[in-house]
Structure formats: C-alpha cells, structure tokens
Length: 189
Image 1 (tube, one colour):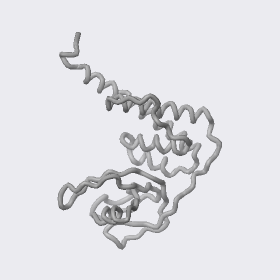
Image 2 (cartoon, rainbow, N blue to C red; image 1 turned 120 degrees about the vertical axis):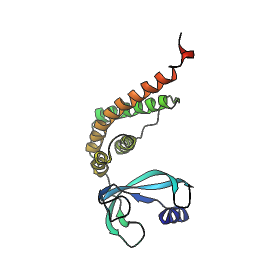
Image 3 (tube, rainbow, N blue to C red; image 1 turned 45 degrees about the horizontal axis):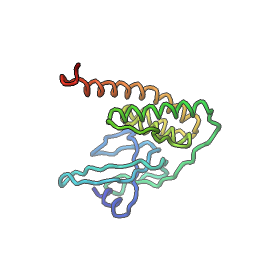
Image 4 (cartoon, helix red, strand yellow; image 1 turned 30 degrees about the horizontal axis):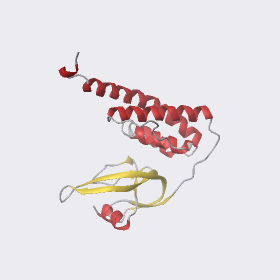
C-alpha cells in the first residue's frame, strides 16, 4: 500500500520483476535482475487491506543495486539499450502477420472488429508486444529469457516461436466462443 501511495503521489512508475528465489509474500525474495517498469492506470480500494490495481508495462530495466530498507524491495536501476542488428525482412513480416492474426482472433473473442489492428513499428517493439500478449498464456519462466534479450534479431525470433503457439491457443478460444454464441436452440435452423 505504501508503494502504491508513493507512486500515485509522485505520478511515478514502479518496477516489476519475476521472483528468482524465495516466497512471493512474507519473506526474503530474490528477484531476477531484469524487469519492467509499470505505470498505474487505476487504483481501486477493495477493503482496508487490499487494492485492485491496473497497470501498463512501460520500459525494460536492469537492477544495479537492490535495497531492503523499506517495506518493499526497491532498487537503483539502469535502462539497457537494445542491440540493433540486421533483422531479416521475412522474419519481420512473419511476426507482423502473426501478431495481426492474434489481434483479430482476440477481437473475435471480444465481439469487436478493427480492420487493421495496430502493429508496433520496430522489430524490438513488435517482439515486446508479442511477449506481452503471451503473458496471459506462457509461464513466466518462459517469458523471462525474452525480456532479458537485448539482441533484437534473436528476441524477435524467440517471440515468433511463442507467437505460433499463442495463435493456435487463441484460435481454439475463438472457435469455442463462436460455438457458444451460436449454440442456443433459438439459433438452430
């Protein structure tokens, strides 16, 4: 609660990292050194002890120094720079088409339609968007290496591997939703 109050007061982001070792609550935890800054989008008090927060990931960071002198962990951080190498146009096209398909399938599930779903303009941002989309399905230990990759070419290759499974999973979800929509007696001929 203190961290959220400070972030709201200062309009500041906070860091999110995957726990490498230790408990999530009630004990000393060791985080992975690479995480993402997150901005609070909304904060809703649920009761005296709980909050419902909605966040948006902003920027990758690396922990330089970790501190334990507050009720929550905090760190001095640095923002790593992507290593931009030549990314094959075919790989960018595969990632772009797969990401568009994923967005269309998700829109189908939500009964929405958008002619041309937005696709990030750079290969690094596209890889990050695919990783964020996979967050709902892939286990965190599968996504952490993607977050830590600074070589854009390799990150996009790894993201496309995730994307293929994610599209299959989302396609099945869309089929199930469509079947439920048209399953009622009143829908049969």
